[in-house]
Image (cartoon, rainbow, N blue to C red):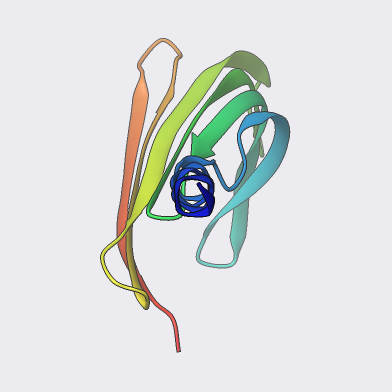
Length: 117
């Protein structure tokens, strides 16, 4: 009986997300060309993330506040989806795909590897 309880507890612990739920993310990114400031953009996103000890994911979207240095500010939609996968105890691979809608949509990608010492 104790073996069954410990087996169920271990399986539950491994399948339980490290964090799962909704979050608010506000992020500002400034742009420079050489020493000249060319503007900034601010994401105001509602997101959801989940996963477990070997893989995580997130999906977020909301307003994108564009503030060019010598241009007209605008509010558009932006979104991101991404995640990470543990290859070993010390190595994670991660990626992200993002979009900002405007007259011409902008897309971004991010791929990487994290090594933990």
